[in-house]
Image 1 (cartoon, rainbow, N blue to C red):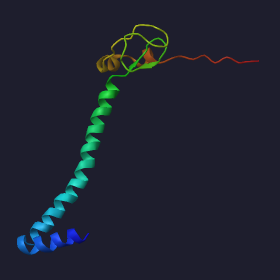
Image 2: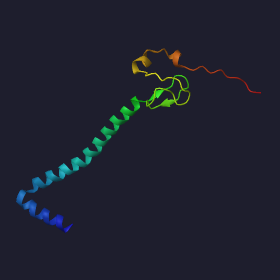
Image 3: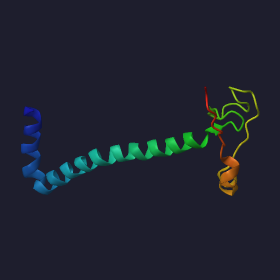
Image 4: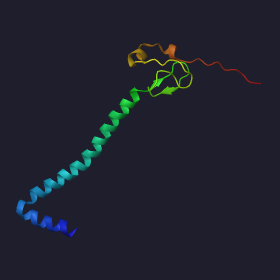
Length: 103
């Protein structure tokens, strides 16, 4: 702490208070921008990871896209594009469940 205070006492009279204030401002700005940069990188990585996830059309298991077959039931996985999901009718992707009374 003594070293930093001596450096400040030497630098402020030589270069002026404006340099000291701008230096502190830049440090504070970096402290806010570095976490923001990490958040942007995390967001891009998450979207990249999310785009590789495939869902099996037979059993509904989720796969990370590392293989072409489903790990649960063994059926071939299709590369489903986002455009084909928007063109489907809602009734094609809805599962109908019939209720039965158990006695």
